[in-house]
Each structure stands twice: as structure tokens, then as C-alpha cells.
Image (tube, rainbow, N blue to C red; front, top):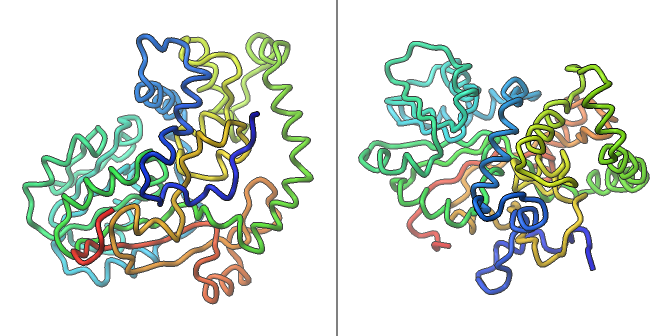
Length: 353
């Protein structure tokens, strides 16, 4: 029987029993929708979906919230001369912000797999080193430095599939008390808060409409209309997903039935909201990071934690992203916002995962 992912499995990935759940959400999508399994591994399938997504997504990466205060609160406590390792640096959001607040770094490692993204950063900085690849290809280069480091992943941690393995590699490249800074990550426990439950009720009302739209988009007549009749509309917010999906189908990467929502779930892998509408057997859900398990998953000590965007749900848009009430909630309920700002440090006394 096929069911939706269960909320009760949210903290499953924090458990130590490796036999508890060997399957992953990615494995299910691969098994059901990958076209050429003989020549395409599940990891390669994941990379292909990512590449097709970012082909059209480079223009989309801006941040609706002003994160300056969070960067300032972290960097004001750092002595000048740290190495900055920006993992998933995108188009340079963190780089520009760190320059704007005036922090003097020793070297800035700009690690971004997508050259389309990093090419948007057009600066002349002798301390800047751009690495177009995944962080796994950079660990050896970073290990030669004994300098104090701050690692940054801005809206990037949720792209990592295996957080325990990533955390182990990260710790091995950190010196004692080095910082790992996550200024912008979805709070996967937000749906359990009062406002989150309110939005869930609204979503229950809106779900039939969403399901009908999905069925229509998958029909032959709609696809024919979109491909041969309709004029392209670049003003549609998620049109990049439609373009990516069409390319994936045309290039025989995915089978019919793979949806735009599945593209987003594959790329932003660790976001609960991206998966809650995708039906699959529960044994394929390995869980998500939460405030309760993120320290244990990474093997690091939390030293700074705030959440923000309390009156937030982009599907329904009832509230502005920032207003006086949101600020009040942020100051009084620092763990209940829709997004996390968190800093962790390496502490040898923290038990390894």
C-alpha cells in the first residue's frame, strides 16, 4: 500500500541502528522513474536532476530576508584572519555580505559545483579561490591549513543526502572550536508549531485543488498544448521547473510521471515540505534533520540558534514575510520559526555520531 510520508518519521535519521532503514527517498524515485538504469547509478541520477534544475535556476537565488544581523552576530566574535569556506556558494550571497560587514579574512574558498552560478560573481579578489566542484573534491586541499576556519552553508545543508557522512568529513577538516554557520535553512519542525498546524489545516482544504492541477499537468493533452501551442511565459514563478522537467524527459533521463515537485524534492533533498505531497512507501523515508537531531547528526555543538519567518507560508501568502508581529514572535519563541539560523562548533567533548 502506498502512503504519504509520515510525520512521525521526521527524526528517524537520528537513530543509530543502520539496519533500521537502508532505503532512501532518492532510491524510490530512482527505482520508479530513472530511464537508463544500466548506465545510470542512483548517484548519477541525482546529479543529472540537479544539473538540469540549475540550468535554469541561477537567476532565482536571491533571499527575501535581510540576513545581515545574523552574519554580523557571528563574525563580530571572530578574530580577523580566519579562512572562510563557503560550501555551495551559489552566486556569491555570503561572499558579498561578508565583504559588506567588513570582515578581514585570510582566504575565501568559494565552493560551488555550478559554474553557471559562480560566473555571476565577477570580482577581483586575490584572497578568493573559486572551486567549481563539490566539497568532497576540496577536503584534501583544506586539510593542509591549520588556520582557524569558519565553514558556511547558506541554504545548502538541505541539499546533502547523507548528513552523517558529511558531518564526519566536516569534523575531520575542522580544528577545535572552528565554526560551522548555517544562516538559512528550513526548520523541518515548523509544521508542528501552532502556526504550522494552522497552515496544514489550510493545506488540507487546498489539497484537492493541488491534486487536480497535478493530474492535469501530467495529461497528454496538457503536455502537447504546452509544447506545441502555448507561448512561453517567463513570468510564471516555477517555469524553470517546467523547463527542467521537459529537458529531463526529452533527454530520456526520467520516465513519464516524474513531476516538477519531484525535481525540487531531489535538489532540496532535506526539506520536509518538498516531500510531504509525494506518495511513496514509508520504508523509503530515512527521515529529516530537525532542531532535536542536527547536533547529533553532525557531531558538533550548537553555540548560536535563532529562527525567523514565523508568519510564513509561500503557498498561501496570508502574511508578509517580515512585520512587527513576526519580529515579536522571533524574539520570544526562538525555536518556532519557519527557517533556522544556527552556528555550531567542533568540540572534542561532543560524542561523535
